[in-house]
Length: 485
Image (cartoon, rainbow, N blue to C red; front, side, top):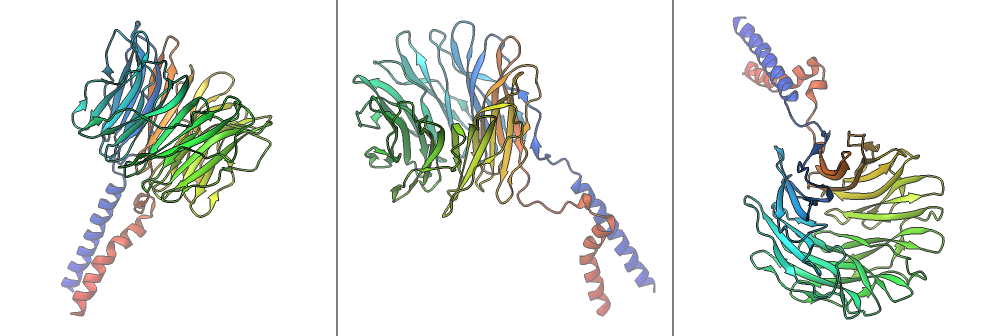
């Protein structure tokens, strides 16, 4: 009898202790999923800051870059987000006060190393300069990597794989027309030298975009003009072989010189690529896409969605580890503006486009999208409500779809524009934008904490009796075994 009482007391003590432990764990200070409060990540009030870019690594760290006036020239600035700590202090990564630097592009590998590239004016021409961020050490010294003896550059583009190999492409005036050029960066060796990407020579080649796969191979796309028509062209860079032969990836050339918008593209680790662009048919602008399959080549261009009553613009695309993709764009149906999206699924194709904004009286523009390795996506855009521009976002979850759009910046007194977003492998997002304070544009950022993809049971929401029973199962089993002995 005494032994049974002791066992009973032991059971009760064990259950109470276990229940208390579980309740304590369930109420621990784990990060709460969702958007955190936006923060100002540059505090230099000497001049306006413009066009931020952001990239993330595989460990939940991020870097943002932008260009900013000091009252005399424009310089390149950066800030770093450290997982578990937050944003640090902004720093100059280019400080040549005799010339101005503009519109930086940024890319980051899986280990936290990054590259930034930007056009820099020397008093006569715009050259290209670069700086490298090394995880654990910080930014190096900015270097001139391309000396331009011909004319102005449009904005360069940059991409990097997870091992740190990078490629830059740009449109440069040469031989009486604009052509697409590239330079490749290898860790330990630096920039390799300029190469011509396209030799079409039909007319100006402009608005290039670039993506790299997991092996350092690259695909570039651009808009090619021939004097009266335009089309989308592409070329592929293979490691050890170089650039191949450029080819047109649209179904036909447009009858209008402004028929195509700047193409966008994304690549998965295996080298499969999806490109999207806007194409004008004489009445509406539609979203078109083409897919490159590694080892097979480009397919046939197809229209994303069949609704000919809307006009679309500003497409963006992101791709997950399995090759599925999400495209977003702005559209106008003749009455209302909205942000729309479609998902590409392997072996299925493009799904039916759907509206992902909620404020139909407003004007959304410049959507940007990023995905994690599982295919969950976050998109961000700037939206005008007829009073001011604000920053909005929505999130796509595989097998659940899009959520409800919401505003992520809380300072509604002045305009917020030029949003960009990056997502790390686990789905955490890093958004940046520029926002006016009544005197100058500043750079703001917000951090999204993704829900745990495989959450443990939420014990705090379970009845105490249920918690106690779950905790008691091992103890009861041991007692029954001892009693049978």
